[in-house]
Amino acid sequence: MVRKYPIGLQSFRKIREGGYVYIDKTELIHKLVTGGSYYFLSRPRRFGKSLLVDTLEELFKGSRELFEGLWIEDQWDWSKTNPVIHFNFADIGVHTLGLEKAILGALAKNANRLNVTLSDTSYDQQFKELIEKTSVYGQVVVLIDEYDKPLIDYLGASDTLTEHRSILKNFYSVLKGRDEQIRFLLLTGVSRFSRVSIFSDLNNLEDITIGQNFNNLAGITQRELEHFFGPELESFAAEGVGSVADVKAWYNGYSWGGKDTLYNPFSLLNLMKSREFRNFWYTTGTPTFLLHQLKRLKLGDLDGIRVSENALADFNANDPEPGPLLFQTGYLTIKQRNGQLYELGYPNREVKESLLDGLLTVYRESVHSDSLALVADLQTALTQGNVANVIAALDSLIGQVPYDHWNADKESIFTVITVLTFRLAGVDVQTEVHSARGRCDVLVKTPDFIYVMELKLDASAREALDQIYAKNYLQPYQGDSRTKLAIGISFSSENRAVAEYLVENP
Image (cartoon, rainbow, N blue to C red; front, side):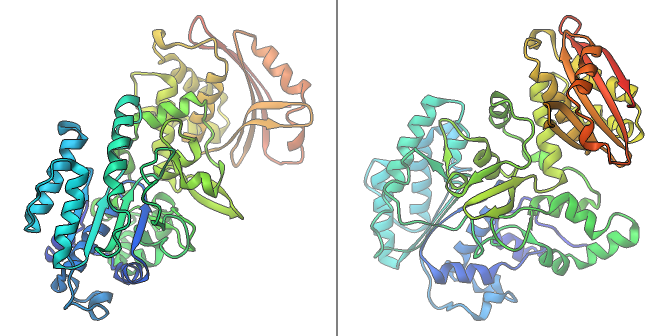
């Protein structure tokens, strides 16, 4: 029997009635709805937020037949139902209608479904009216999915962002002080914005983004993988597709402070269907704003960023910090916690490749977007100690930067491009490595080689190599049995290429 995988499906009903594989999250959902009333949850895109919201809607509507065989079936009072108001800001037509008209349209659809007639004309008063009139039939459940989409999509347009911020503040303020009318409220999104005041009147939300209790509410744990996808994993091993360890390295690694690390459901389900290891994350699209923001901050070495708990929970729309920005968009995740300080890192191979490839392309400002193809031979050259091929790969990357985008006055651009290239090749690379007398530009380690590189713009390779010796950059590795190579590289701003290089084995 061929199994069906709910790739991209957000309808709990369609998944259950269609016989698709479903990861039973109803025990955690029960804990959520019985343990509180007002929640906020942030997760990256493609992590199952919309499916969670839709599942909650079916639960409160009393759709018992959809929950047959699931944990919650005999733990829920199906005789009690609640009217559900449901918004998804990702599909109400914000881009085509404008935010205010889109909200009015969504309010009208909810009112029609709930048999309520709205007479007010403004969007905030209509929302208030909808809650009040609907609560006649019982306490209302309010589910707002992708609450921040009208902000995320306009981060580069300050005027529109300011307008949307004001509209959303008015809209969400309606929810304040309605305990008698609201049974349950959940807002989901990618980010929690600071300094935008949209939550200033809605300060009774419990933020369950970070912590032990609901770490596993969206996403797939290792235990769930092995339980629900046992047949697939067995066939993978038998047919040589890959091992459980391969699956984990490619797609696991997300954490929001819990004991378990998680898989992105979208990538994992695509793996199960295609039966081959590929980068599925890039198909969801890396935001251009994110890449240009990282370039503006001159960031290339992102692994190991440390941020405070307060910074991690907030997102400043006007001037986003790189740590929270990357965490909340899913490119970095929590690796370690020390008190109120968190260390972030790439969750897995798939996401790391996606971000580095996109970032390298933006730094190069090149019309050639496939940086991965250019580093395919580089990995082999580094592991074999073939310096000539290493230089040839770097020369190709630099040479494809269009002339009118050439920023040769900035020597650091070459270091960043070089480091990103080596990281994309999957080798151990560090930049600005401190020694007793200074800092070397680039340090690369492979199983058999240690490369210490100094990069110069419009200067000689000899000068770069001499600096390695003068500053004694190799001294910390004298006890290491690997072959050590000192490499001086000179870039030419006139020719937009590697002008020369020298390599020595001290």
